[in-house]
Amino acid sequence: MSLLWVILGFALLVIGGEFLVRSSVALSFKFSISKMVIGMTVVSFATSAPELLVSVQAALSGSPAIAINNVVGSNIANIGLVLGVTAMVGAIAVDKSFYKLNWPVMMVFSIVLYYFLKNDNVLTAIEGGILFIGLILFLYALIKKGKKDTSIEEVDDALAVVSNFKIILWLAIGATALYFGSEWLVEGSKEIARSVGVSEAVIGVSLIAIGTSVPELAASVIAAAKHEKAISLGNLIGSNIFNIASVLGLTAIIKPITVTEPQILSHDIFWMLGFSFILIPIIFLPKKLQISRAKGFFLVFAYGAFMFLIFTRG
Image 1 (spheres, rainbow, N blue to C red):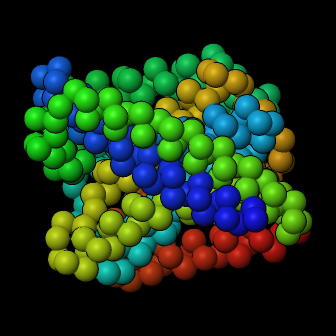
Image 2: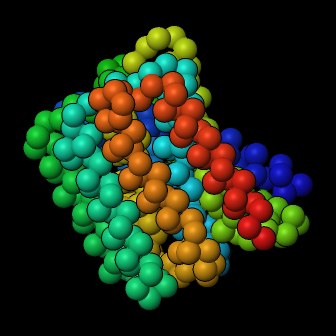
């Protein structure tokens, strides 16, 4: 039964996220916000909503390990699984803005998160606020530079003429689906953790993290198979930044997150830092600014090794 709740939870999160994105973009058009700003802010926030709801629900229901490792695992999956599999389908070109702005910012957020958690084993409301303010500054820098993100291409012009009734209906459907989806996913995952004898941290960094990355993975592979512009590395890095700054930042503001599973700080977060750091040598060696099929295979292999180790460490 717990597996059914997990599957239903994932399904509702996908549905809720889609409706929230559509309603948010349509609402933004009503306020005459530019497509560039919509793509960089509204779409990014809306697509982080499933992870945010899962982390808030986990923290409020007494499972802080799921709240933290939902983000840690999603960040690892974005690079190892999503980026790796997509590159295996077709080589990915890397924009120079990656190492000039996006990658350094991601590394700073990742290291600051590690420091905040390691310092006193808790992510406080003040620390969550610092992360969120950092995100606002990052978005301001992006908008000021006018860097065009591929997420902007996903802003559908047809949403500019949607009626107010439809927007309200989509918001209601999205919010309801996200609420119940996050509740069922967290509760079902906790039941599975108890039944198979693994910690909630392991479930958070594996099952939940992969589940929240599946829609992005599917869309990326389909686009790559059609020889379209498959995925932007900047988009994935941006997603990782949002996961830390908005998902964990806002969750900590609502309820401080305590580190209850020691392996989060002794093991899992170092994998996140490692996957983030290794992108620099990958995009420069041997061929500059390209992630080839071989490099994609390496990322997927490393992700497989990570998954093997978390389930066999005892």
